[in-house]
Image (cartoon, rainbow over all chains, first blue to last red; front, side, top):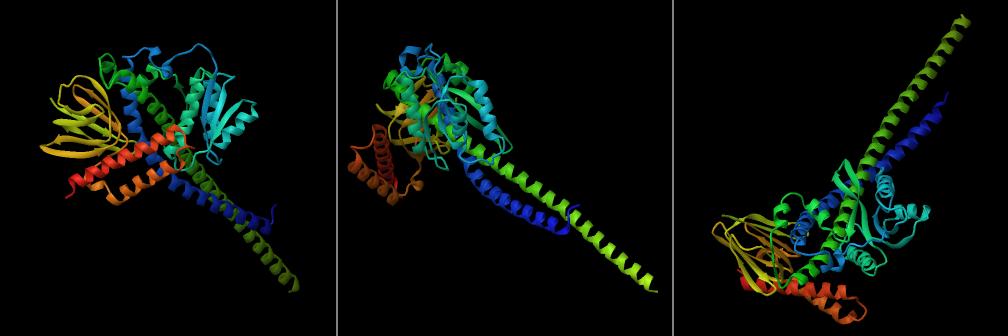
Length: 287
Length: 137
């Protein structure tokens, strides 16, 4: 049986842990609010952009722009957006699982975030490039990433570029996703945009100044925003997951402290009773 | 038949409601849109966007972007959309000056994207400034 001093020491250390996790929880909660707002604000723009693209896509063939061209080769590049820090629940593990089932086994990687870069290296996969993105996500830092993967695709190093990120559903739910970024496909865009585009897709559009120019300007914009949105979604997911993980850690620590305190008090009571017993026995013997 | 107008920037949805007409700053000149317009996708340049909402003309300064026009809907995607009250003259001037300086000093070492971004910033800010001065109360 543990003695009193041991238990006291354990209570103290658990208390310290609880304090730390609580501080981390509060920090994550503050960041979470900001990141969630950013993710939600960007969604509207991304959705409309996807919609416009889906609508006008029907007017173009695959050969009209190199970014639309579907190739037969199987070389795949995956842009992985993970977190720099751990302690955010099963976020990165889930994303890794999704990548394992959603990407070809010999795909190369571009990573953002330390956690899954290490994972890629451990598995012996090739990491072509690694980027760091500040928090909160600035659009300026995301553009070079989009540019880099576009270049890789256009130069013919890869036939397909996917993007693996964690979609933010709500504070308690985040879903790992792997979506195809390049070539920009009409089906994916239509699917994402949802319902209304079905009839618009069959409609003919006029273009100003001309179709090629509009498409040439809208495609890079679309890719930039797709990558940007994936980043802000991932960031919102990260902070939410961390907040939840730290909250449950704090709760567990508190529960543990309660249990330990109970045990401590029982022992203390036991010791006092034993002492009293000894005294009364001694007194009885003296009579 | 109403015309539904959506103005969306990366930061937020600026406007979404039925309007009577819209005037857009297209790259090939100003463009008036009424309900039942033919399907059109156009690039926008920084300038003034005007719409008639409940009998009142509302004017916004917009940056470059796109507009998708269908019979009953106009979707404007732009990197900036601000009313007169939102534009701060001093800070906008400051932003233009900073961007121009940056463009001058290190333009040889920057890639084309960076230059394009700065130029976009300048033209967008200039449009905002021009707009502010025109409609100052």
